Image (cartoon, rainbow, N blue to C red; front, side, top):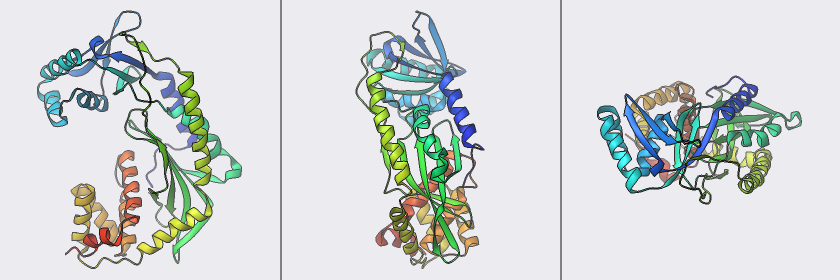
Length: 355
């Protein structure tokens, strides 16, 4: 499993640091403009009537393009080759099709450009509710991996006392996957997680998850930019939701649920690769968007694992997740591993017989 921060304490410190350095603004596009002199900046009217010039990161820039209807490929082309034209385009739509947006900043940089319906579920709120469960010695949980990337927060915990063998000598243990994005790059989600001890692979269980989209009612604001203040009603609703999430974390270690998930893994050991393994990974890659280099790495682990079955392919994918540099991409591959477990006979067949 890909390792991020060294401990849950480090995760908590980073959550607190970011919480101290972030600010949110709700603004009408008529009160903002884009400038692109070497780098992209969003200019907004501040609460004191001054103008703030905030650097815009790549995620927020892409979200901005989506919101004004500029195709991603053309947006990136203008950003790279004609930044002044990009600013002109964006500012035209800001003025002629005004809308209110939530602008999320961190350390003075725009990190997200979101709808006014975006409902904040912040990492600090998740941590305050979930971490006490994970740190409770009575629960017997171990934090296997955790991180905060530019896009998401991840916590992956396991229960060493709840283990089963998929095959003789191939032991897995029950875990829980918790993830949240403060910038619109995914749901707040809690899902079961299976950790394989032989090679420390992990895979998300995708059909038993609990989560919430960051979408709520519109926030009513005046025409001026202002820092978003705490909305007690929304926070009370979020608190009730997070308390339910806390209960789901505990339920992720239900023995019957874990047994059912292990049985599904056992079934995959019986589905063999009947054709050419190289072609099988190519078919898998085309259907799941794997890059050529990723396909090569997965094929290498499949051959090294010497298990030409659906189970072997799953383990090759999740083992390769440890080789990629990005924690986000590693987690996507762990999620893909879980999706491969759920393939039906019909969905598995094109991979199995590829020649």
